[in-house]
Length: 122
Image 1 (cartoon, one colour):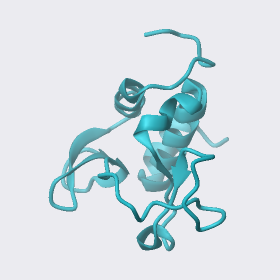
Image 2: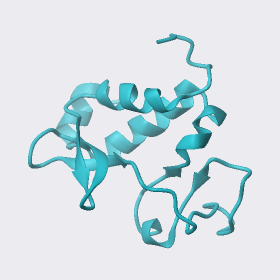
Image 3: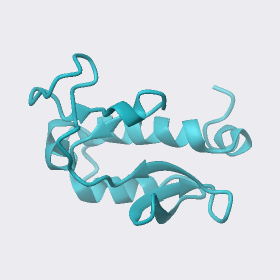
């Protein structure tokens, strides 16, 4: 794996970044969706899941279908602190941008004590 954080992100980076965070495991949610959870075990909360492509994907700013950005949302996620990204367009993000997005998702779902241990008081 390249150490150049400015290179285009890839689907393999999702797995590597998620599994590089503390107490993360790959499980299942919503019946059959592969989902990264924190912490490991029964208390795990999903912070990244693989969603099947669907026509309901819209631009988070305009609410319209928009090919200008790899990000999208759906009505179901409007009340959640969630970002949806088209996997086929990950290369429009750098590895570092993807790592930052995933780390922020992890922080939102991880136990506060674990976040403090990993990131400190900062």
